[in-house]
Length: 142
Image 1 (cartoon, rainbow, N blue to C red):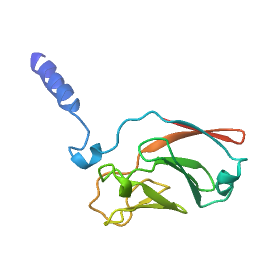
Image 2: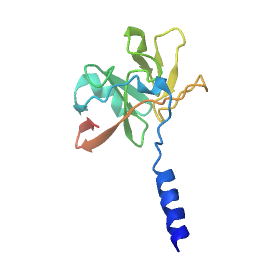
Image 3: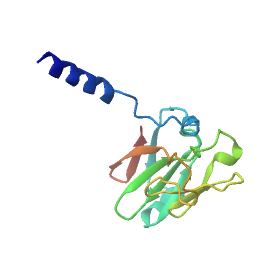
């Protein structure tokens, strides 16, 4: 009975190990509070009424926020490349449902899944934010 208790205790402690990837590249984004309201009636967000479009919102998150409309859902992502230190080139430029950083390696990400598209060795995906719809307003937060 005692050995069963120790076996269960050992299994418990082994399951409590950290599940984070020990990759320094995934630590480039700061944990910044995001709370943005997007009024879909405003002209600057009119593109979000059509499937496959995205809009960049500056001054939120690490490098701004990119909101994408898939036709079924609105998704919001931090516009900073998670695989680069913060710099001018690490801010993503959105184009439809993809976004590309301006650095020399041109990392490209899906705005549907947040996963890297052109480089399988990248271990960090885009940081996702919660999107809540209230009438014609999107509330983006973390």
